[in-house]
Image 1 (cartoon, rainbow, N blue to C red):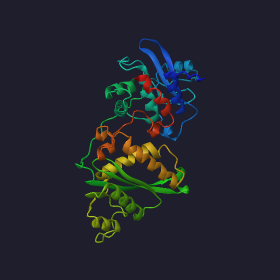
Image 2 (spheres, rainbow, N blue to C red):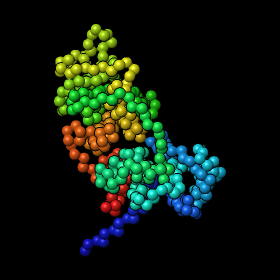
Image 3 (cartoon, rainbow, N blue to C red):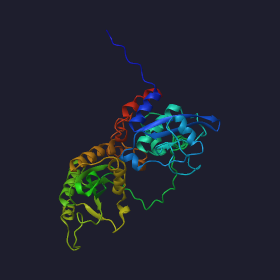
Image 4 (cartoon, rainbow, N blue to C red):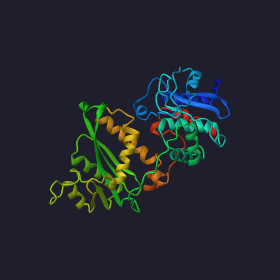
Length: 368
């Protein structure tokens, strides 16, 4: 006799559980007038983790904030001044609070809006990345403007001034130019007493493809050369290699060549050295370090060298095959490097959504 299949869970229950797993509670409070049809507030559920603690949002709370707190059953104290910043009086600082109203509220289904906000809470993706991820994964054809309005209505929009772009360059094809760099030290368990490690990374200029990354106990040149040799064996010999002027890559005495430089000469690889104190000239690998810091190192506590190696190797697979790159027209580095297609249609391969991916994936068929 066939056992009865359990009834599918409501979409609202799935989102509620996903946000709860992230340590947040979704509270929806109806407004009393047309100007404020609804408010939403996300409250920390029992404290924040390391990643959320660093990225905790301090939000603006209006005169109605104390009333909202009482309605939500989370207590209340004196509300801060309208438009001000500070403690909310809810017994815990709110992670995010929504702005009231908002134009074009009906252009996107409410379920899509809540899914976008949930993903935003767990990943801190901006509106451009949200739109690209939802569209390329065929979850919902979300435009940048629509994503921007969703974040603005929910109070998660963070306007910023456009950065002044520096000199840019890009080789015309893969393996024309590689960038290699050494970063560190990074301390285990958050203290220098437990030891530290450095990370060596190698990136292709044209595709931003991560050719290799390793956690190293020291700054010695031998493991860095082994990383380069492995990349050459797998991907071929590049025409040029760019490094900074650190001792692993350049000899202290200018009239002499380091072992690293001699090896490049034997392989007929042109060695390009950046100008002193200008890390932006090696910008492709510097941009990768910034991404690694935000998505891995700030969110994990590395216990030892083995844990660091596992963390960066796991992230390398996601970075190349599953992470969309804004500078590549929201394609993956692997798509541009060797044409590997992007086939993701859910959130299974996104490390930042690992705990809630099954619940979020269950919502995708509902949106179809």
